[in-house]
Length: 367
Image (cartoon, rainbow, N blue to C red; front, side, top):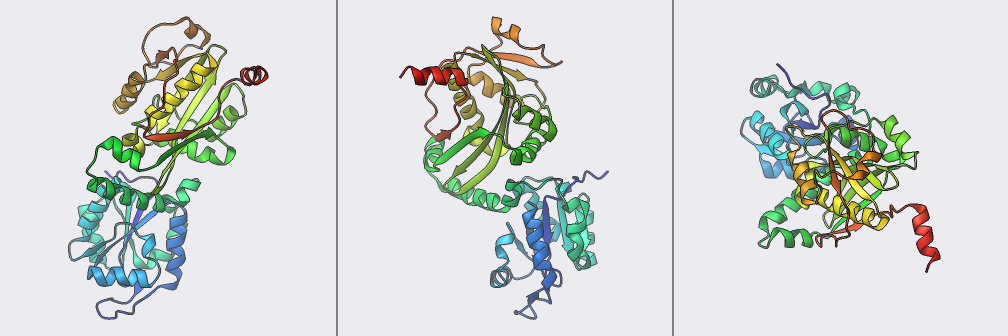
């Protein structure tokens, strides 16, 4: 039974008589099929990664891609003489993509057949279909966000980051400090709602409740001053990680209710969840309120429970809980009597002041 994803995340190109006209080993001056340059750029702008699986001399093929001005569009190209199914399998592993999110295009029926036999979940297309790929539903995501448009660059930055980490001889903490990490927390805007919706839908391991927030629901929340929808982005000296977290917060006079905390798995090793909770704890302490967080345990999100516990959330009862509506079935309520603490030294945090307007006005008037 096929387990193909709704949309393709990575398209793998053959080169000879597929991406370019002719065979490189016979003609070192091969040229690209003119209409395919626009196809490559269109898919890239939609956030679909692209790579290469080609039977060729690696040095010659990679040099020719550079000469033709398209090498930057292909991540982790695989050029050699082994089975193309193995190249695609390696790519999927390196990108952490399911086989059902991969696609392959080749002019040779036997090459497509080999991949279809070895990797039945991978979509395969003949070369003559290349120019029409952007018209297919599986290459047309429902929304294209800012992060989608720069997804390739974020992955490429990640490869450089991983390579430097592998060569680094110091401690993990010192390596994180060397990255120059900056977390920016901000109130969600209209243009960010598509990415926020995507985070609530796709993030399962680092999601505290598993609740999906549709774009229209998020739009109502950001229009209501009693709610906060906060987005989290991270950058370092290699480049942006993009939008990596979302917090949905209800504010009551004596307690703030964290209805959802979700972060991308890509930033687990950075301690992103702990950094968000440390900042939120300090904002609550400055506002004189407690924090209450919803947590629905699943077979995938135990790490978020651990994150809350390390941030001093407990199962202890408190009178502030009476202000909140009853929890949904299966939801545990965790409580924290917030006390100000210094933030971690591995990451700068830039964030808004969440204190109520009347509190900040009183503090300003008293100066």
